[in-house]
Image (cartoon, rainbow, N blue to C red; front, top):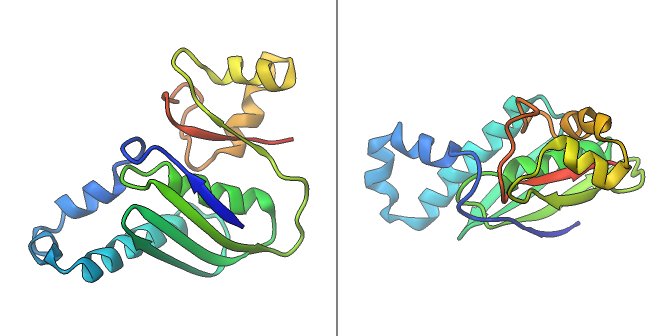
Length: 159
């Protein structure tokens, strides 16, 4: 459990897309609590739609911080949820309240730098650029293509 910081203005535009698709909701956004509840709902739907299993999932949103609750069977799934949320434009921090039933050793997090590729990152962490696919698989469903990473994005590097 902990608070993970991310670049607030980098990543998936899922929150802006949801607001653009619902002009009536945008007009009613003067009420901050209602706006935060809608945002939390979008984030929760995103996680549910990802296929990452989280029991009793709940998401709260307040002033750029997403707080996520639930239970997973693995640290891998927990970290995927944190990264999915943290790599959404508008999220500055993720407060992790997810419990894991069988916790293995934790992975490292890495912020992508300009000029990075998954091969370059794999060489840095594993000494072998051909192991880039391990990093790619560890970051799915957030990553759709191993060639589509960007500076400021946070990736999970499995042990």
